[in-house]
Length: 225
Image 1 (cartoon, rainbow, N blue to C red):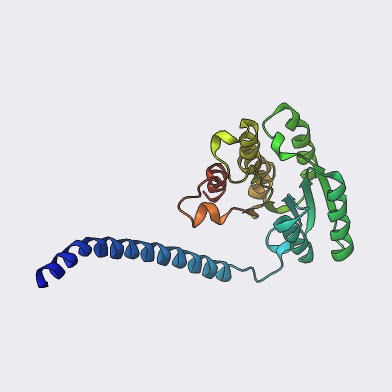
Image 2 (cartoon, rainbow, N blue to C red):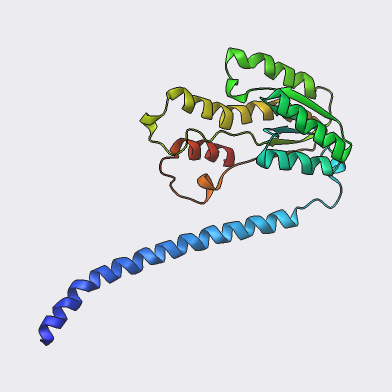
């Protein structure tokens, strides 16, 4: 009986070793992510501007995708701090609505640029990009918020979605971020001040793998780097 019990212990020991090893790796990863997040919060707190945003960065801000969600909240918050806004989106009616809301609530100036960012780096995207350059020309643009993003197609295998859908995601999540930033960056450099805010995703920062969202996570990782 004693030898039989001994054999059972010998067989279960490797399983316990693997379990403890995996638990240690998981705990180490969780601790790393937590420390990075805490460090990020501490950095944000330390670098919170003590003076007003207009004086620190500039009188104008450019916000892409300002008609809903994070983009709308960012636009309203920047306006609350007194920044005039250049609002960039693809739906003229909703752009007019958010523009009117911002002006009525916070008494700031606004400009709207109708721009389907999925057309960046195509012939159809040249004209709206030119209009964006004209809209910001001569303005003291101190903040740009690259918020516009595409998450569709959602959870699918690569071969299940149309190729054009992936191309559209890359254009909006990567190419548009580059182009919009390039429009305002020279002015920021010449004035020696400015802030570029790129809206990323936890799916590319804190999760080592995002099955069925590989393309989305990859494009958002571009934003983080």
